[in-house]
Amino acid sequence: MNKFEIDSDCADRLIREQRSVWALLDKNCQALERVETRIVFVEGVPVTLQFNPERIRSAAAVVDRQSIQNRKCFLCEENRPAEQVGITVTGKYVMLANPYPIFPKHLTIPSVIHTPQTICGRLNDMLDLARAIDRYIVFYNGPRCGASAPDHMHFQAGNKGFVPLEYLWSDIYREQGEAVYRDGDILLGRLKRWPQSVFFVESGQMDRIAEAFDLLLRLLPVLNGDTEPMMNILCTYEAPVWRLWILPRRTHRPTQYYEEGDKQRLISPGAIDLSGVVPLPRKSDFERFTKEEIVDIFMQVSLTSEETNRICKEWRKI
Image (cartoon, rainbow, N blue to C red; front, top):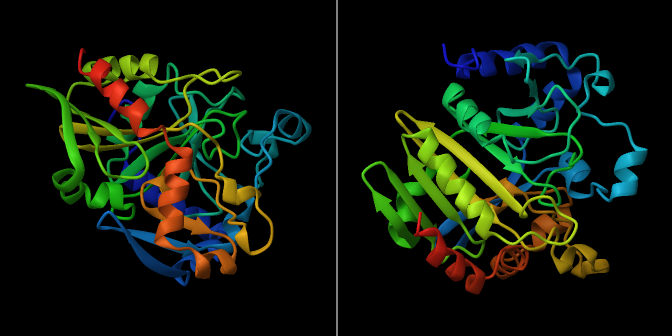
């Protein structure tokens, strides 16, 4: 067994057992099996639009400081439903079935301690998780980057073969990838044409990944009042190599979120949206969304191409 003393079988079994005793989870998992989807192509990549009404809680989450302070944290043990039972991971995290799934198998992995959402000091935990549950993709939504609980540190994970950025990576890299730096045991790169800025790191050496990530973190802008750069992160492990995608952001939500009437689009992008699966809680948005709108929204929330180019020049100096 690995450092975290869990594996993908443990995760699968947890979801099965939770579905057998938790009616809400089972109902929403069954609904997900029948969910309406449609495909739009962005730079040759099939982006899935998913009509998922249960995701209204995330898309419309009120995450300003005052609202967060006034509500009970739903990731703290004392506030979780009695039916929601998890697996404690090294006394530091607890692995839970997500009752409002996007993936067929969707996990939330919060810290056992109520502490703010930040990747600082947690990257190795993310890498260890990805290696432990290697049939899953592990992801992190930063504060104001899709996290509906920015006051409580948590990762999420979902089954591989679902998010285009992961399961079509060979094709995407061939068509859009650019190496920024390469030596024998590490590759740093970026995507040239995806409307959301994407950096990636591949290596079998955890310390090299951490070194590259720490440098990138220092190069990314930090907005006033934030404690870390705005970003989403995804990670997979295919023995013996980790792949880490970093999606730097400049804003929380697109202008369409704040429009009224037919012009409004209820979308608050997180890691999964920006990687090619867009859950939409309203049927009207699901039916009206166009490729052009997706590109526009991704570009609005992303770091600009000029900033991305500047960072690449510095990042290659690792």
